[in-house]
Image 1 (spheres, chains in turn purple, cyan):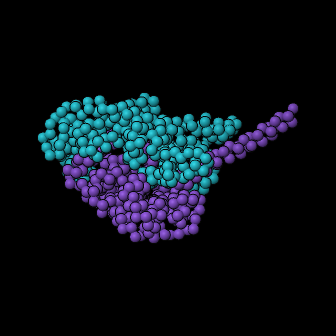
Image 2 (image 1 turned 45 degrees about the vertical axis):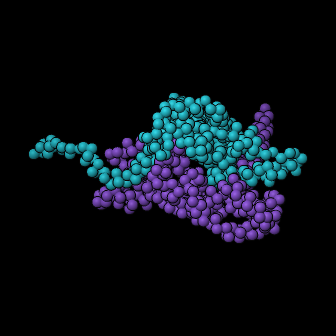
Image 3 (image 1 turned 90 degrees about the vertical axis):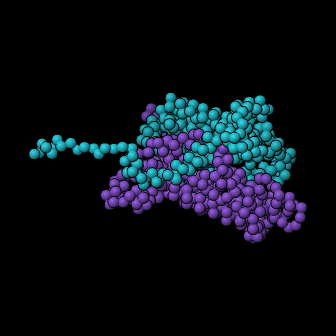
Length: 303
Length: 314
């Protein structure tokens, strides 16, 4: 009898470990497939950007570069349009993000002070814009009326402060112990002094978060540049990419008509252009990973 | 003597709104740029929605143009495009919601079963990556993979003896291209919140379950899933609130005349008639209609959320 039970237990345990093994394999399989599916398109693009142009044109490259070459990257250096567009994107990202972060921190700090007399009213004033918007066309008209049409500032000023980022900044600032602010007050500093000397050094996580959020937004933006910019010299790289990847317009037909070596390269240039656009973000973002996970959590708590 | 000190009333200084403003002058200075920007670029456009009720011309301005009441709205409701764009808006956003909502949950559940921290971290880093890529690049890569002449997918189909499918100019393909590329881009990022909800569950509950003989799947469905249910439902309700804001920036890049029948949504229609054809009044009227439905959905979702889960956004 006793033996029987022991035997049963033994069998049962073995069955469970077997089950556990199979389910572990299934889980690992699903997770690895998911990871591969997300990464493969990028891998495909990179591998193609380094391959021989004629092989790229025939779509023969899918796992490893064929006759690796840098010819497309060298060609890219001669494309003055790409260079201008790339410099513009860097300008929008650096200038835009700096101003975004500065003004968001200023307002976020002020709105986190419990005794601030207009705290509730201004917070509400900001939060309402998250749910009600003026719409594309009225916004377009106002941007034009304020003289920003076809200037660099059209991409900086109307989107200077994001309501969502301001609210998470306020939420973060509220978690900073009041004693810190108090000690600054006792030393006779005003609010600007407190913000710059006491709050900034302890607010690094939120600053990192704002930098990555705003910078990615500027780097990836195409819609506003598309509707606000006419001048080719001001266009960011995303618009250039749209022309060669999606619209497949002017440049393609022109080059096909001339029928020179560039036609062969044209396909490959799509890949190299994606690589140079995506690369900076891909390199930077893993370093910010722990910050934006915090950010998602603050955002979730605040709704 | 002692009594006197105690009873001496400490008169609060007379406070008025004005003295408060003086006291908070630096704080006011700090929020001033924000207030100005929001006033000009968020609130002023709301007032400019008035042009939906007139025949606005740039020359005559907002006050000089003729008021025509609801004529623009009537024009929209009687146009052949009205039914199409409203239907497409709802079909696209509901499909996106129904298929896109469970994926990050399943991903977070499965990933939390993996014990190796290194595998976990690598997989997470990979899965967040597409979230940081611009729509232009995502749609560009879709063209590279799905183009009818040179796409890899069609090359595979042809090699296996099939016939190439022109994915981008086939109306019935648009919805699936849109929805699945959206899932591809965001499932990893959307799983972050479920993942942290799972890691907040008290490990003692699992230990108790193991003692009671619960297996892996039992733990997943009887402990993990119920524990993160509030997060799941709050996010579902939030997404219902945002239904009307379908990703029109992506649709503008993806659609063409051949796929308008299934791809054209209210906001892309607003963009075409309002900005490309410069019919400002008509476009604004349609946009206003879109915002109204959107508001109703947001308040409805918020009401539901308060009733069902005791959490609300406002």
